[in-house]
Length: 390
Image 1 (cartoon, rainbow, N blue to C red):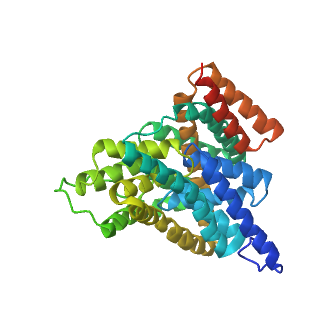
Image 2 (cartoon, rainbow, N blue to C red; image 1 turned 90 degrees about the vertical axis):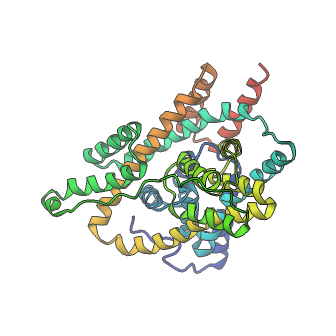
């Protein structure tokens, strides 16, 4: 990480400046949580565009390091990025404000949708919204990949790691194995003489489905603990979260049906903010507002714990050259995974000339005119709304 001091390293002589930083964190992440569609990769791309390029809250290298750290710990990456950035910008108060502000809008939106679902048994149809927004998200992702890639891919071997992870993703290799493998591979490349003494790398155990059990009586304590367990061990994408939810709430506890689980996942897909607010929907369906609060708290609380621990540990370890090398490899691997997500989104979203035009215009406005990404997302939503009438 850059040697320049950050907000948490040196005391601020002006309390009003610190308060202003905290207010900036609150405003930005509330706004992001209310408008950010497209999943963690898109959220991180928006943060990079707004906080690194436009507002200069942190450097490209600091941002890349945060991506690497969040990819190495369990939990939702974009939420953990918000927590980390809040900490860097406004200290420990920003640590809490950044994460909560990012999650809160999605929590409230999903809570309202869950109420409508329980009352009327259906979900609102908002496919037109995503039709116009997804091409904008792809443009933001591509811009972030270009800008971060120029900083992260410092040599041909890091570029090779990124391309290898991209290929491995489409070959079905586990995401966590790719991330740790990217860091390990680059360390081996940089330390060939010592590689022979390496005994090997232990991979995290894969998710296994629990055996089918009889329906367990509902309790708020079990609800909270189930989500806390998931938040404490879950790596990877929303599809991995789906596997955990299936195993815990459909198979083991018998609290949800398969259609209810799929509806919960759909809610997470077409609402802004972190996808993990799927927990809010499930909690409300099972236990009303109290259940929604406990489920959301259970799933996101581990992220705050892991960020606090990883921040302290990483700052102690970063003085060691080997850690810097491994993190460079993890950063390159994370960019490879972001590229894979961008490719998949593009394949699913660029379905006609309108969506291709939205992508091209958004890219031009981002690169040439530095337009705020929020306005582009709103413009994409407007295009989708207009398209629904034709």
